[in-house]
Image 1 (spheres, rainbow, N blue to C red):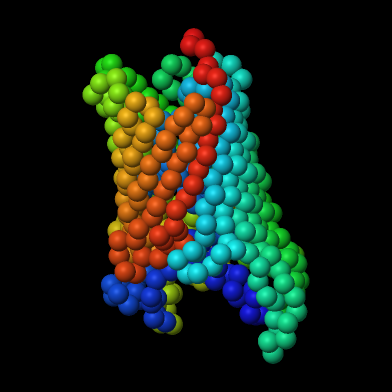
Image 2: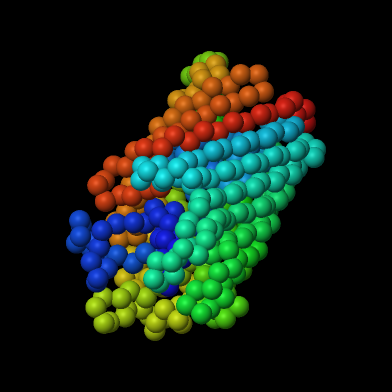
Length: 396
């Protein structure tokens, strides 16, 4: 494999944040536990696109509706307070490793159709910068620019004053090689289609308290192929997110939100390989695993882990977040994200804040790893979001 392609693939692995020290038998050198990661194509689709959720431990399935609801829970758009809004986020990538030409850009917009329904659209673009292409002898063959993007359209509708549903259609494209030949095989950009569905419920406990629940299935769709000769396609990062929010307003100036999210990849668990042995009840080898259909894989993802129910529970990711608003103008946020060591080991603290003035809201988020083996492309990186909301909707 050419050096440039290898670098691109390693970069994509780094995107998932699942980089840890291990030996040839897939044993984590820090913890001594045998890991069994679940890898997918275009993992950038699961990366938090905004500095609000990013400052609350990547929690947001039941957070207050905002311009970034397409990522967290599309059903929340039905309860958004404003008639129209535009949002954008800039996220530097791998700055902790000294790279300066990799970044993630997000641009979203929504428009309320009437008091019960809302339309939204979003574009996510990930640039891996410029990479030098060389042959096996080190001869320079030119420069290529790997990139990935996704474009989606969302419709959300209220079912009643407390409950809403959302649906999203998404086109994705991953171009890691710019069509170069790799070991005699012609490569191409991988294209795919995916869908999201969400449900959101909130209710006022009393005049000072509110409770909300949400569930969201995202990126459920076709598999990805990077070559016409490729018979083993990559899974999209289909994901189930469920969670809740508790809001408390002690007075007219102060508000506190507490959030909890649980994530589960709807992607089958690969066979576990230790030495020369392969362990799995469902897949005899990786070829059989990769030939599994996306829908069948999503169903089997709940019970196919080689380690049984214990490993299934280790595949859950937990996000806990808190947010404080003063006078609906100044916000302070903090959160924590946990992933088991055998499934990637991402464990980090997040902090951030926001300020709202007129139609503008400006937010920041910062990520701090809490374990020495936890690697994340956003380590010690500031994320910046800007949102513009126009004209509050009329009450029914």
